[in-house]
Image (cartoon, rainbow over the protein chains, first blue to last red):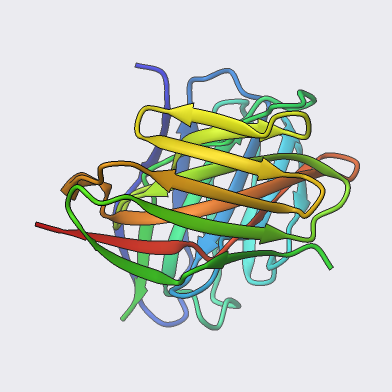
Length: 114
Length: 113
């Protein structure tokens, strides 16, 4: 099955811990994105990557880090510097440089600080 | 400032009824507009996508319209079903070195039996 897979579905983090959210896609998409979703707010872009070994900060990158060592994978690390990490995190991918480019989303990871 | 506003924030309708969700945007330069359906705790799934030249697009019981002059879009749901209960998100994309997406906050629809 082609698609985009996020894991884990639920994640609990202690104060001061770093955690890494996984995102894998087998759609052969060049672009990958990480979004954060909070109640009552639209999705906000954390980081995006258009090509392997390259990524750009989005609107709310502080306290997060990413890597893009493989085309299929775009893991997101939530560091201890992120003061309010409890949220629903969505990973997406798309083909770049096409007018009707569509973003396909994973099923999300719900991160809770305990 | 690029913004996407949706209304109403929430809506409750009875099964079998029709409803219309609204999306207004101030995104420029406009590339395309799409509607997503997001079930609780799941990722969004695309319903329709429209470019500047398209003013109507249907997907089963879902019909989206786009007025690029007034920068408004609507999503009409016909003969609603319980499974239509979800959040519906309007997303406008624009090009600024790369394609970027502006997400609305969504309309939460509840269909009651």
